[in-house]
Length: 283
Length: 112
Image (cartoon, rainbow over all chains, first blue to last red):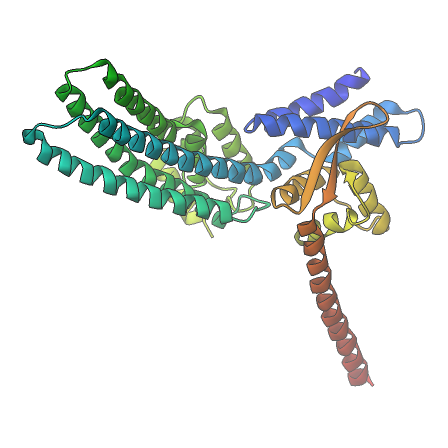
Protein backbone atom coordinates (compact mmCIF):
# COMPACT_ATOMS: atom_id res chain seq x y z
CA UNK A 1 0.00 0.00 0.00
CA UNK A 2 1.42 3.46 -0.86
CA UNK A 3 2.50 5.45 2.15
CA UNK A 4 0.05 8.31 1.78
CA UNK A 5 -2.97 6.04 1.33
CA UNK A 6 -2.43 4.49 4.76
CA UNK A 7 -3.13 7.82 6.40
CA UNK A 8 -5.70 8.79 3.80
CA UNK A 9 -7.78 5.68 4.50
CA UNK A 10 -7.64 6.33 8.21
CA UNK A 11 -8.47 10.02 7.82
CA UNK A 12 -11.32 9.22 5.43
CA UNK A 13 -12.78 6.86 8.02
CA UNK A 14 -12.46 9.48 10.73
CA UNK A 15 -14.08 12.10 8.47
CA UNK A 16 -16.95 9.72 7.73
CA UNK A 17 -17.49 9.07 11.43
CA UNK A 18 -17.53 12.82 12.06
CA UNK A 19 -19.85 13.60 9.15
CA UNK A 20 -22.53 14.74 11.65
CA UNK A 21 -20.59 18.02 11.83
CA UNK A 22 -18.91 18.95 8.54
CA UNK A 23 -16.93 21.93 9.86
CA UNK A 24 -15.68 19.89 12.80
CA UNK A 25 -14.70 16.95 10.60
CA UNK A 26 -12.65 19.24 8.35
CA UNK A 27 -10.83 20.77 11.28
CA UNK A 28 -10.21 17.45 13.01
CA UNK A 29 -8.94 15.89 9.79
CA UNK A 30 -6.32 18.60 9.39
CA UNK A 31 -5.28 18.35 13.02
CA UNK A 32 -5.05 14.58 12.98
CA UNK A 33 -3.15 14.53 9.69
CA UNK A 34 -0.60 16.91 11.16
CA UNK A 35 -0.41 14.75 14.29
CA UNK A 36 0.17 11.53 12.35
CA UNK A 37 2.84 13.06 10.12
CA UNK A 38 4.54 14.52 13.16
CA UNK A 39 4.43 11.15 14.91
CA UNK A 40 6.05 9.44 11.91
CA UNK A 41 8.69 12.17 11.60
CA UNK A 42 9.61 11.64 15.25
CA UNK A 43 10.19 7.90 14.70
CA UNK A 44 13.82 6.92 14.23
CA UNK A 45 14.76 4.46 11.50
CA UNK A 46 13.66 3.77 7.96
CA UNK A 47 10.60 1.59 8.57
CA UNK A 48 8.17 4.25 7.46
CA UNK A 49 5.19 2.00 6.79
CA UNK A 50 5.48 0.39 10.22
CA UNK A 51 5.81 3.84 11.78
CA UNK A 52 2.64 4.95 10.01
CA UNK A 53 0.69 1.94 11.21
CA UNK A 54 2.05 2.49 14.72
CA UNK A 55 0.99 6.15 14.62
CA UNK A 56 -2.54 5.12 13.62
CA UNK A 57 -2.67 2.43 16.30
CA UNK A 58 -1.52 4.88 18.97
CA UNK A 59 -4.09 7.41 17.86
CA UNK A 60 -7.05 5.08 18.41
CA UNK A 61 -10.21 3.90 16.73
CA UNK A 62 -11.95 6.60 14.62
CA UNK A 63 -15.36 5.61 15.95
CA UNK A 64 -14.26 6.02 19.58
CA UNK A 65 -12.76 9.40 18.77
CA UNK A 66 -15.89 10.52 16.88
CA UNK A 67 -18.11 9.49 19.80
CA UNK A 68 -16.12 11.80 22.07
CA UNK A 69 -16.88 14.70 19.76
CA UNK A 70 -20.62 13.90 19.57
CA UNK A 71 -21.57 15.40 22.95
CA UNK A 72 -19.64 18.57 22.20
CA UNK A 73 -21.12 18.93 18.73
CA UNK A 74 -24.66 18.47 20.01
CA UNK A 75 -24.32 21.20 22.62
CA UNK A 76 -22.83 23.52 20.01
CA UNK A 77 -25.80 22.87 17.74
CA UNK A 78 -28.27 23.28 20.60
CA UNK A 79 -26.74 26.67 21.40
CA UNK A 80 -26.91 27.63 17.73
CA UNK A 81 -30.59 26.68 17.63
CA UNK A 82 -31.17 28.76 20.79
CA UNK A 83 -29.52 31.79 19.18
CA UNK A 84 -31.58 31.32 16.01
CA UNK A 85 -34.78 31.16 18.10
CA UNK A 86 -33.96 34.44 19.83
CA UNK A 87 -32.99 36.12 16.53
CA UNK A 88 -36.20 34.90 14.90
CA UNK A 89 -38.28 36.29 17.76
CA UNK A 90 -36.43 39.62 17.53
CA UNK A 91 -36.98 39.69 13.75
CA UNK A 92 -40.71 39.06 14.12
CA UNK A 93 -40.93 41.75 16.79
CA UNK A 94 -39.29 44.28 14.45
CA UNK A 95 -41.62 43.27 11.58
CA UNK A 96 -44.67 43.64 13.84
CA UNK A 97 -43.64 47.02 15.19
CA UNK A 98 -42.67 48.26 11.73
CA UNK A 99 -46.05 47.29 10.33
CA UNK A 100 -47.84 49.05 13.18
CA UNK A 101 -45.83 52.21 12.51
CA UNK A 102 -46.67 51.95 8.79
CA UNK A 103 -50.39 51.78 9.56
CA UNK A 104 -50.06 54.96 11.65
CA UNK A 105 -48.10 56.78 8.94
CA UNK A 106 -50.55 55.77 6.22
CA UNK A 107 -53.49 56.38 8.55
CA UNK A 108 -55.13 53.15 7.62
CA UNK A 109 -58.34 53.00 9.58
CA UNK A 110 -60.73 50.13 10.12
CA UNK A 111 -64.47 50.01 9.65
CA UNK A 112 -66.43 49.86 12.94
CA UNK A 113 -67.58 46.31 12.03
CA UNK A 114 -64.05 44.99 12.14
CA UNK A 115 -62.80 46.85 15.21
CA UNK A 116 -63.96 44.23 17.72
CA UNK A 117 -62.41 41.38 15.74
CA UNK A 118 -59.15 43.29 15.40
CA UNK A 119 -59.16 44.08 19.13
CA UNK A 120 -59.44 40.37 20.00
CA UNK A 121 -56.84 39.50 17.37
CA UNK A 122 -54.39 42.03 18.75
CA UNK A 123 -54.84 40.64 22.26
CA UNK A 124 -54.12 37.09 21.05
CA UNK A 125 -51.18 38.36 19.02
CA UNK A 126 -49.69 40.34 21.89
CA UNK A 127 -49.98 37.63 24.55
CA UNK A 128 -48.89 34.82 22.23
CA UNK A 129 -45.84 36.84 21.33
CA UNK A 130 -45.05 37.63 24.97
CA UNK A 131 -45.25 33.92 25.84
CA UNK A 132 -42.94 33.10 22.89
CA UNK A 133 -40.49 35.76 24.00
CA UNK A 134 -40.47 34.53 27.60
CA UNK A 135 -39.99 30.87 26.63
CA UNK A 136 -37.42 31.77 23.98
CA UNK A 137 -35.30 33.76 26.44
CA UNK A 138 -35.60 31.05 29.12
CA UNK A 139 -34.63 28.40 26.54
CA UNK A 140 -31.67 30.44 25.34
CA UNK A 141 -30.43 31.01 28.90
CA UNK A 142 -30.92 27.32 29.68
CA UNK A 143 -29.02 26.13 26.62
CA UNK A 144 -26.27 28.68 27.19
CA UNK A 145 -25.77 27.68 30.81
CA UNK A 146 -25.40 23.92 30.17
CA UNK A 147 -21.88 22.73 30.89
CA UNK A 148 -19.92 20.95 28.17
CA UNK A 149 -19.94 17.22 28.71
CA UNK A 150 -17.35 14.70 27.62
CA UNK A 151 -19.92 11.97 26.93
CA UNK A 152 -23.57 11.68 25.90
CA UNK A 153 -24.69 10.37 29.29
CA UNK A 154 -28.34 10.10 30.35
CA UNK A 155 -28.46 13.41 32.25
CA UNK A 156 -26.92 15.21 29.28
CA UNK A 157 -29.48 13.73 26.93
CA UNK A 158 -32.24 14.87 29.30
CA UNK A 159 -30.87 18.40 29.14
CA UNK A 160 -30.92 18.30 25.34
CA UNK A 161 -34.50 17.02 25.45
CA UNK A 162 -35.43 19.98 27.65
CA UNK A 163 -33.80 22.33 25.12
CA UNK A 164 -35.90 20.78 22.39
CA UNK A 165 -39.11 21.01 24.43
CA UNK A 166 -38.44 24.69 25.08
CA UNK A 167 -37.96 25.24 21.32
CA UNK A 168 -41.29 23.50 20.62
CA UNK A 169 -42.98 25.41 23.44
CA UNK A 170 -41.75 28.69 21.94
CA UNK A 171 -42.88 27.64 18.44
CA UNK A 172 -46.55 27.01 19.34
CA UNK A 173 -47.46 30.55 20.53
CA UNK A 174 -45.20 31.98 17.81
CA UNK A 175 -47.28 30.22 15.16
CA UNK A 176 -50.47 31.50 16.84
CA UNK A 177 -49.05 35.02 16.83
CA UNK A 178 -48.05 34.87 13.15
CA UNK A 179 -51.40 33.35 12.08
CA UNK A 180 -53.22 36.14 13.94
CA UNK A 181 -50.95 38.68 12.24
CA UNK A 182 -51.76 37.19 8.84
CA UNK A 183 -55.50 37.52 9.50
CA UNK A 184 -55.22 41.07 10.85
CA UNK A 185 -53.00 42.20 7.97
CA UNK A 186 -55.36 40.56 5.50
CA UNK A 187 -58.28 42.48 6.98
CA UNK A 188 -56.43 45.80 6.82
CA UNK A 189 -55.27 45.24 3.25
CA UNK A 190 -58.77 44.22 2.26
CA UNK A 191 -60.16 47.37 3.87
CA UNK A 192 -57.59 49.54 2.09
CA UNK A 193 -58.58 48.00 -1.27
CA UNK A 194 -55.01 46.98 -2.03
CA UNK A 195 -53.22 50.30 -2.69
CA UNK A 196 -49.51 50.13 -3.68
CA UNK A 197 -48.63 51.00 -0.09
CA UNK A 198 -50.14 47.65 0.93
CA UNK A 199 -46.93 46.10 -0.30
CA UNK A 200 -45.11 47.14 2.91
CA UNK A 201 -47.32 45.27 5.39
CA UNK A 202 -47.52 42.35 2.99
CA UNK A 203 -43.74 42.16 2.73
CA UNK A 204 -43.30 42.46 6.49
CA UNK A 205 -45.89 39.71 6.86
CA UNK A 206 -43.98 37.52 4.44
CA UNK A 207 -40.83 38.15 6.49
CA UNK A 208 -42.63 37.09 9.65
CA UNK A 209 -43.84 33.88 8.05
CA UNK A 210 -40.36 33.16 6.72
CA UNK A 211 -38.85 33.74 10.16
CA UNK A 212 -41.43 31.51 11.80
CA UNK A 213 -40.65 28.92 9.14
CA UNK A 214 -36.95 29.14 10.02
CA UNK A 215 -37.81 28.60 13.66
CA UNK A 216 -40.03 25.61 13.00
CA UNK A 217 -38.23 23.89 10.19
CA UNK A 218 -34.56 24.58 10.74
CA UNK A 219 -32.57 21.41 10.17
CA UNK A 220 -30.41 21.52 13.32
CA UNK A 221 -33.54 21.70 15.44
CA UNK A 222 -34.80 18.53 13.84
CA UNK A 223 -31.42 16.89 14.22
CA UNK A 224 -31.24 17.95 17.82
CA UNK A 225 -34.74 16.68 18.38
CA UNK A 226 -33.95 13.26 17.08
CA UNK A 227 -30.74 13.06 19.07
CA UNK A 228 -32.44 14.29 22.21
CA UNK A 229 -34.83 11.39 21.90
CA UNK A 230 -31.93 8.98 22.21
CA UNK A 231 -31.68 6.34 23.48
CA UNK A 232 -35.38 5.63 23.99
CA UNK A 233 -36.02 5.62 20.30
CA UNK A 234 -32.50 5.12 19.16
CA UNK A 235 -33.28 2.68 16.40
CA UNK A 236 -36.53 4.20 15.23
CA UNK A 237 -35.39 7.85 15.20
CA UNK A 238 -32.80 7.16 12.56
CA UNK A 239 -35.42 5.51 10.38
CA UNK A 240 -38.13 8.04 11.09
CA UNK A 241 -36.13 11.06 10.01
CA UNK A 242 -34.96 9.75 6.72
CA UNK A 243 -32.19 11.44 4.83
CA UNK A 244 -30.53 12.82 7.93
CA UNK A 245 -27.12 11.21 7.93
CA UNK A 246 -26.29 12.93 11.17
CA UNK A 247 -28.97 11.16 13.14
CA UNK A 248 -27.92 7.83 11.79
CA UNK A 249 -24.38 8.64 12.82
CA UNK A 250 -25.32 9.75 16.30
CA UNK A 251 -27.50 6.70 16.68
CA UNK A 252 -24.74 4.40 15.56
CA UNK A 253 -22.13 6.11 17.70
CA UNK A 254 -24.31 6.13 20.80
CA UNK A 255 -25.36 2.55 20.18
CA UNK A 256 -21.82 1.32 19.96
CA UNK A 257 -19.90 3.57 22.29
CA UNK A 258 -22.17 5.18 24.87
CA UNK A 259 -21.55 3.63 28.28
CA UNK A 260 -25.12 4.52 29.25
CA UNK A 261 -26.66 2.56 26.46
CA UNK A 262 -27.21 -1.08 27.30
CA UNK A 263 -25.54 -3.42 24.89
CA UNK A 264 -28.40 -5.91 25.00
CA UNK A 265 -31.01 -3.52 23.61
CA UNK A 266 -32.76 -5.17 20.71
CA UNK A 267 -32.57 -3.23 17.48
CA UNK A 268 -35.21 -5.25 15.74
CA UNK A 269 -38.89 -5.91 16.39
CA UNK A 270 -41.75 -3.47 16.82
CA UNK A 271 -41.02 0.04 18.16
CA UNK A 272 -43.09 -0.70 21.28
CA UNK A 273 -41.15 -3.87 21.95
CA UNK A 274 -37.84 -2.04 21.52
CA UNK A 275 -38.96 0.83 23.74
CA UNK A 276 -40.08 -1.57 26.51
CA UNK A 277 -36.82 -3.50 26.30
CA UNK A 278 -34.78 -0.29 26.48
CA UNK A 279 -36.76 0.96 29.46
CA UNK A 280 -36.23 -2.35 31.27
CA UNK A 281 -32.55 -2.37 30.45
CA UNK A 282 -32.00 1.16 31.75
CA UNK A 283 -30.18 1.32 35.09
CA UNK B 1 -8.91 7.67 37.34
CA UNK B 2 -7.06 9.26 34.45
CA UNK B 3 -10.32 9.88 32.58
CA UNK B 4 -11.65 12.08 35.38
CA UNK B 5 -8.50 14.18 35.42
CA UNK B 6 -7.83 14.48 31.71
CA UNK B 7 -8.89 18.12 31.58
CA UNK B 8 -6.50 19.02 34.40
CA UNK B 9 -3.68 17.08 32.75
CA UNK B 10 -4.20 18.86 29.42
CA UNK B 11 -4.38 22.27 31.09
CA UNK B 12 -1.20 21.50 33.05
CA UNK B 13 0.59 20.45 29.87
CA UNK B 14 -0.28 23.80 28.30
CA UNK B 15 0.82 25.78 31.36
CA UNK B 16 4.34 26.12 29.94
CA UNK B 17 3.08 27.82 26.79
CA UNK B 18 1.01 27.40 23.60
CA UNK B 19 1.35 24.05 21.85
CA UNK B 20 -0.30 21.90 19.17
CA UNK B 21 -1.96 18.57 19.92
CA UNK B 22 1.06 16.38 19.29
CA UNK B 23 3.27 18.59 21.47
CA UNK B 24 0.68 18.44 24.27
CA UNK B 25 0.80 14.64 24.16
CA UNK B 26 4.59 14.66 24.20
CA UNK B 27 4.58 17.05 27.14
CA UNK B 28 2.18 14.81 29.09
CA UNK B 29 4.36 11.81 28.27
CA UNK B 30 7.54 13.60 29.29
CA UNK B 31 6.28 15.10 32.53
CA UNK B 32 4.50 11.96 33.68
CA UNK B 33 7.50 9.79 32.88
CA UNK B 34 5.35 7.83 30.41
CA UNK B 35 2.99 6.74 33.20
CA UNK B 36 -0.21 7.40 31.22
CA UNK B 37 -0.92 5.06 28.33
CA UNK B 38 -3.91 6.87 26.89
CA UNK B 39 -4.85 6.70 23.19
CA UNK B 40 -3.45 9.85 21.63
CA UNK B 41 -6.75 10.52 19.86
CA UNK B 42 -8.52 11.23 23.15
CA UNK B 43 -6.49 14.40 23.66
CA UNK B 44 -8.08 16.19 20.70
CA UNK B 45 -11.72 15.96 21.86
CA UNK B 46 -10.49 17.16 25.26
CA UNK B 47 -8.76 20.12 23.64
CA UNK B 48 -11.92 20.98 21.69
CA UNK B 49 -14.05 20.63 24.81
CA UNK B 50 -11.76 22.88 26.85
CA UNK B 51 -11.83 25.42 24.04
CA UNK B 52 -15.62 25.31 24.00
CA UNK B 53 -15.59 25.89 27.76
CA UNK B 54 -13.46 28.99 27.23
CA UNK B 55 -10.45 27.55 29.04
CA UNK B 56 -8.35 27.33 25.89
CA UNK B 57 -7.92 29.46 22.83
CA UNK B 58 -6.72 28.12 19.49
CA UNK B 59 -5.56 29.39 16.13
CA UNK B 60 -4.13 27.98 12.91
CA UNK B 61 -0.43 28.49 12.32
CA UNK B 62 1.97 27.21 9.68
CA UNK B 63 4.63 24.78 10.82
CA UNK B 64 8.20 24.75 9.51
CA UNK B 65 7.19 21.85 7.27
CA UNK B 66 4.56 24.11 5.69
CA UNK B 67 1.66 22.17 7.18
CA UNK B 68 -1.23 23.97 8.83
CA UNK B 69 -1.28 23.38 12.55
CA UNK B 70 -3.76 24.21 15.28
CA UNK B 71 -2.04 25.70 18.31
CA UNK B 72 -3.76 25.84 21.70
CA UNK B 73 -3.07 28.24 24.55
CA UNK B 74 -4.49 28.74 28.03
CA UNK B 75 -6.90 31.63 28.43
CA UNK B 76 -7.13 33.62 31.65
CA UNK B 77 -10.08 31.44 32.66
CA UNK B 78 -8.02 28.37 31.84
CA UNK B 79 -5.15 29.55 34.02
CA UNK B 80 -7.57 30.18 36.88
CA UNK B 81 -9.18 26.76 36.36
CA UNK B 82 -5.76 25.11 36.47
CA UNK B 83 -4.92 26.90 39.73
CA UNK B 84 -8.21 25.68 41.21
CA UNK B 85 -7.59 22.13 39.96
CA UNK B 86 -4.11 22.17 41.50
CA UNK B 87 -5.45 23.32 44.87
CA UNK B 88 -8.16 20.64 44.88
CA UNK B 89 -5.68 18.00 43.81
CA UNK B 90 -3.22 19.06 46.52
CA UNK B 91 -5.89 18.77 49.22
CA UNK B 92 -6.98 15.39 47.87
CA UNK B 93 -3.40 14.18 47.66
CA UNK B 94 -2.61 15.35 51.21
CA UNK B 95 -5.78 13.70 52.54
CA UNK B 96 -5.11 10.36 50.84
CA UNK B 97 -1.43 10.54 51.77
CA UNK B 98 -2.32 11.16 55.41
CA UNK B 99 -4.93 8.42 55.38
CA UNK B 100 -2.72 5.79 53.81
CA UNK B 101 0.18 6.80 56.04
CA UNK B 102 -2.03 6.52 59.15
CA UNK B 103 -3.51 3.19 58.05
CA UNK B 104 -0.07 1.78 57.43
CA UNK B 105 1.09 3.01 60.82
CA UNK B 106 -1.94 1.49 62.58
CA UNK B 107 -1.50 -1.79 60.74
CA UNK B 108 2.14 -1.94 61.78
CA UNK B 109 1.16 -1.22 65.39
CA UNK B 110 -1.48 -3.95 65.29
CA UNK B 111 0.95 -6.54 63.91
CA UNK B 112 3.43 -5.73 66.68
